[in-house]
Amino acid sequence: MSDAKDAGQPGEVVQNEPAMSQNDADAGQKLDGIIVQTRADLAGQDGVDPENVLAQRLSDAGISLSDDEMAAAVARLDG
Image 1 (cartoon, rainbow, N blue to C red):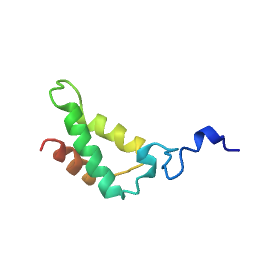
Image 2 (cartoon, rainbow, N blue to C red):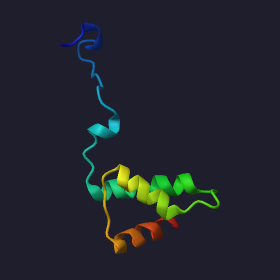
Image 3 (cartoon, one colour):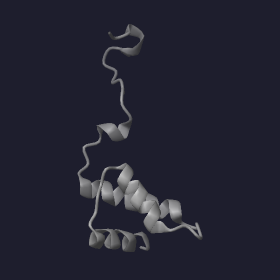
């Protein structure tokens, strides 16, 4: 049952899900975005293993990579 106060104004778009849940990006686009964000997050972070961070984020996103693909993704973190 929907509550009238949650319906918004006529003509107004109501967002009921997080924006990422509405995004239909394919796996390649998601991987690209995760790499860009991880690179930015790791900038200036000494002593952090970028492969572990990337692996966790990919796991969270439901993306699995082969060993070769993971090595290539980690290499992309450097530039």
